[in-house]
Length: 124
Image 1 (tube, one colour):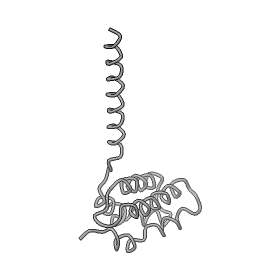
Image 2 (tube, one colour; image 1 turned 45 degrees about the horizontal axis):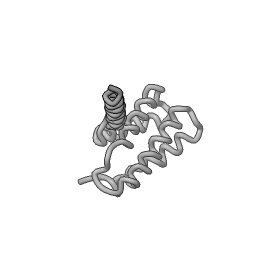
Image 3 (tube, rainbow, N blue to C red; image 1 turned 90 degrees about the horizontal axis):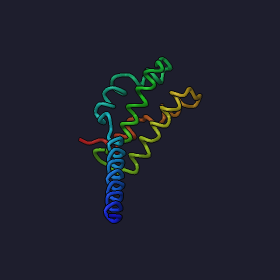
Image 4 (tube, rainbow, N blue to C red; image 1 turned 180 degrees about the vertical axis):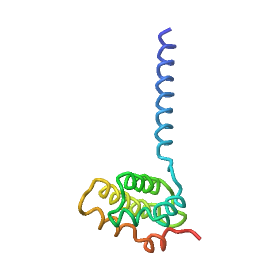
């Protein structure tokens, strides 16, 4: 009887751990594709508005959400480690802007150098 209880407890623990791990992995799926982020944040003018200091708190929050998704996507080409470094810098600087840090705008402007990123990561 004790062996059955141990098996049930171990099985329950393993099942719970698997569910937790699966839930964790699902949280890492990007909410937005790279294409959507580029269309809404860059071509759509959201980044430009935030960089010009005319963006509202809601718009700054939306930009952070887009860039969070960007870090969770896989680039069409190029090194994943380089992608993570670039998109991580973009996200960190967007968060600084959202928090109202004085250096945020300059860092965001530098981090969102389109040509530098497209040259290495943009697909055909």
